[in-house]
Length: 107
Image (cartoon, rainbow, N blue to C red; front, side, top):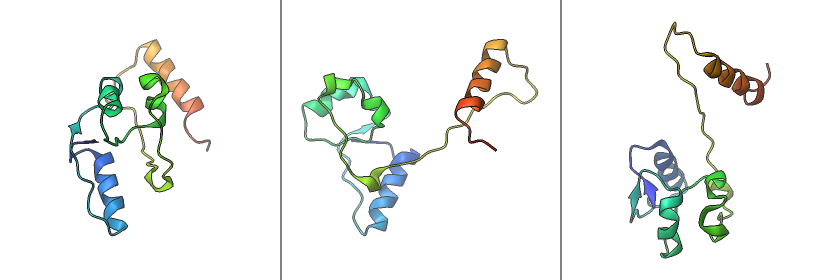
């Protein structure tokens, strides 16, 4: 079970397989979201899904687990977009301040 072919995570997985000289994984189910609604599908099939560890926590009562494959760890960058020249409301500005203070590397 993987996201569609235009999704960066799928492209990265397929590139990792290609680098290892392996054929691309056979995708039986293509999904746009692999969270809670699809946990039941995983529990009742022999499918493997691409999912973040944080999203797995609490799914299916802990009946799903992470496969310990170091090469399968994907890093991604997440950004924040705002309209150019726009003034954010106080709550939006506070959110950005918290992100900068807690998530961005120092420097």
